[in-house]
Image (cartoon, rainbow, N blue to C red; front, side, top):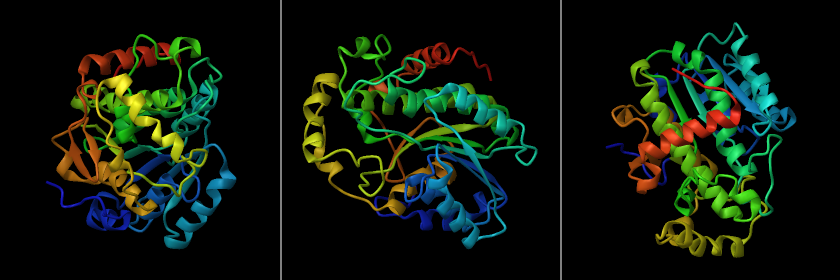
Length: 324
């Protein structure tokens, strides 16, 4: 069992697994300054990766992160890639830039960190997909699968980390109605729960499909962090709604007390980095991780049939099949 836990910091993780970082290439989405993706990149820079690829919508908001990486370790190569995950033209352009860059022959680790939470008004993306599902899952599905040859080129030991949340407990993946009956069945928390369940199921299905390539995928929950931009638009009344919605969707009790235990950004990034680096997880691909430990999620988040259905629906939504 991993020795790490709730209070483990990102600095402790990278120090423990420095040999899994040095000389390797990492791609991270959602790298705005002061967020979890930025913290992962800055922590990794301390242990001399060869290349950090930072993927975000707005370069100005990532420039402070690039400057901090250069200050910590000027020998680390950095590449910024513009990408709006809810616009599949933007995702395809980002993937093309990555695939055509000769300085990126392989990608050892992908950390799909970008996301949104509890969009209160039913909103569709450019393609007509509910916005949270698009931003938190479908855009990452498309980007990751488009650059998969670079990940496979890294060989056995490569990992794909899909950042999820304990919020998966709010809702299963709504395979027969992922768009909430054109908004008639919509609420923001159910949309978030569905998307976070999708992150776990995607990790499960990726691990199954890539088993013969030695590429593994994991879905970590960072914890409750209130200093990033994710929850800026929410207040305590919003969070008080979760228990009733979760009960309605899943029939299960929502542990609100667990969400009150807060972490700082460094502690929140630690499970993401553990999922990317910890060799103790090697024999449990597709796992859900909390506090740097593997935890068994609810049945609907580990159902292989639900994972296959999610894959098929995701392919249909992006208009492309992927066979690895």
